[in-house]
Length: 204
Image 1: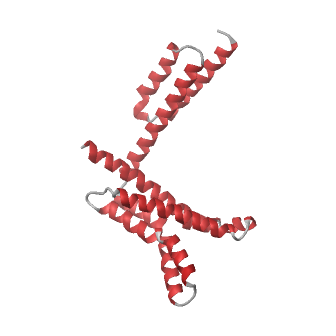
Image 2 (image 1 turned 45 degrees about the horizontal axis):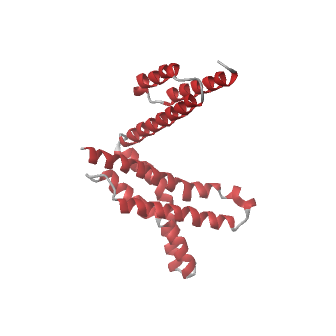
Image 3 (image 1 turned 30 degrees about the vertical axis):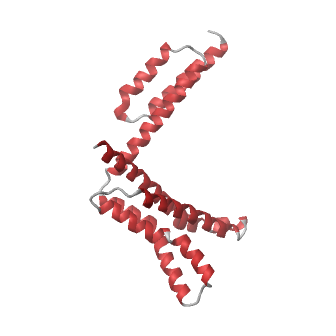
């Protein structure tokens, strides 16, 4: 075995061991089989390519396991999570409406702020309906709508922050987390949950 083959063999083995560590506990036999299979592969770049495929498979399986664990959470825990993520933005939406009604904003500014904060109340309603309804699965239209509102919320709020200059970004991180990041994470969680539920319904 030459130097290049020795290096590729070590790299492939380390990658496969990482894949085995990243695999869920219920896939222990599968992870051990990956390690054993490496002994029968030629010590060249094909072994590295195969090892990278093992990492992809391990990460995919780990992601599916995480989604299933999210799905098995009690409903009250999921509801609490959605309240924490969507309620501040919902209150902001209500505040913008009230301020606009009292003349605190011009109509274009009020519409802009409302469109950005609309994710709060709509996301909260969609989340609670998904959690407590019998069917549970959200429609594709609802999921697409939430994703579009999330993208618009992130873009609108980021653009507003950037107008104040980069030196002020450190003063806005709490607002970024509460108004933009937490709702986005909640929407991602809802998409994962509903994708798994939809897959379960199709399998049934």
